[in-house]
Length: 203
Image 1 (tube, helix red, strand yellow):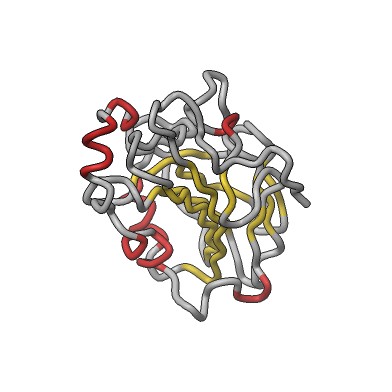
Image 2 (cartoon, helix red, strand yellow):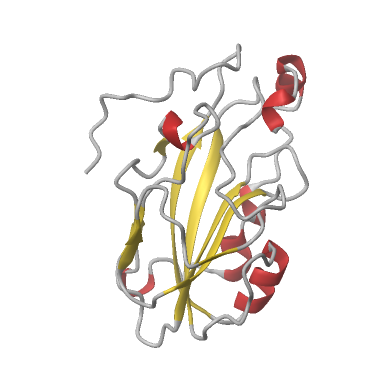
């Protein structure tokens, strides 16, 4: 993964990032759709803008996806989809960590490590939660969890990629919500650095 980039190169590439403007929500959403109808996405494991616990990252071998919870989407919603991306990756496009769809159009949740109804291919070509694993020396990365309320059920089969999912969702987003977790490697690349505060209270 990207952690195998040498620390000196990670530092040299510190300002090379895909950019938040290339996130899926930037392509499909808009100010009028964000949190429309009080549609919200939260996590019991981290606050918006706060560091992810190492148990959700490549720091731990048995790491899993964090829990997520969302409020009821607007009337007319037929399905919910989730896209998790890293816009800080030194790559042309945000690194895709998770594609999920087939979620019921109602308030709900995914428990920690729970298998979603349908998943697509991440940037490594598999359908698992792709563990956050930024290059050493590259600084903190944002991991942006995006949920979309859609006005039609998706016909995609499991294993589809981000391009196919975005194409299917385009023009059918009724509302969207986001929550961001952060993660950075220290100079040695062997832990999560000083950003994670285990004493932080999560509501």
